[in-house]
Length: 422
Ligand SMILES: Cc1ncc(COP(=O)(O)O)c(C=O)c1O
Image 1 (cartoon, rainbow, N blue to C red):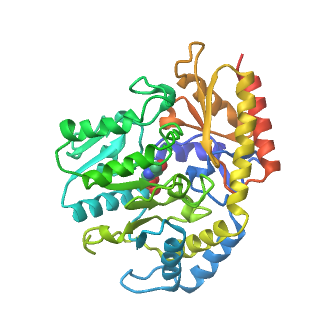
Image 2 (cartoon, rainbow, N blue to C red; image 1 turned 135 degrees about the horizontal axis):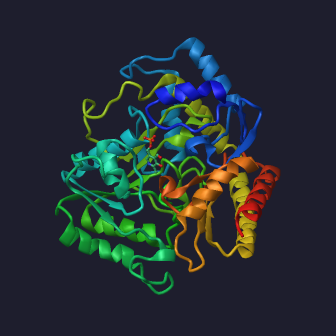
């Protein structure tokens, strides 16, 4: 790790001490031979793990043929990706916009589509949301600490409480609340918004905010509210999509069709840079000049993404995600019974969160941080919610994880908790 010390001073942002060398499947290896199970799938994007052979092959073959052509032309990989995305997404989402450079610009594109289609401007998002790092998506995200340095945030964006039942904003209980958190959105629209709301953007399960799984009926109720008020419902499935929750999209799991859905991260399989906006026919109208990025619809990435969808749609793949996910949840709930600091284990598929609290049950960010830091000594790459400011440890390994690998990960988590928690 010594030879990387000087370079670290040249990199604008902080970089950790580990020099990573190669990866395979769920494992990442450092230059000194250290091995780690990546419980965060890179940046939650390596749905097929490190160096999946089919993705590597697809990219190698495509690289030799054609890496880039302007998106004004058709190419076979892009055509294939578009067809596959329409096939695997909710039925009403029949239009694909690929000319985005990642999740943030996909979400901006979704908002622009909603604005053009509805003729309105306002945007509603949830408290603990994260939608990206462009100026609009920074504004949309519900993390105020990330906005603090920037004076020019966008007007017309309103945040409403999320369906975080464990620590309900309205101090209700899920069995008796009648989904007050949806009902109250009407008040926010009537009294708190700019009076001209184009869309409500939600992550079906909050990713960075703390792995918050909404209660039954929440997304259906939001769908009804949007229909009644002529507002477009946008699902940000940058994290939840491409098999993460045990279905191709969380929309399918919850049985709710959004008007627009964004996907990215896991779509690249083993790390190709690709994202997309999927839209209902009613959401068309955004001009070609109004949202187009040079590396959007990149051919190399499209070849990787089309192959990723092939692999994930194969019989048995998503069943394995659901069954390994259920097994991990069971093991983590058993761990929770041994450690009072684990106040909740929740999730869907392989999108799981371990919420930590102090002796009074109050959120313990310090504990989550400690576990994430010490995890490396136990061969675990762990990330915490709210970019280190939250009290949830996120367990989102590559979707190719086997039962045996899941047990190895859980054994290491057991050892980590036993060593660090008194
Ligand atoms: C839910 C969600 N939406 C959007 C984004 C932004 O995606 P990108 O970093 O590719 O711009 C992220 C990234 O973490 C995310 O988790």
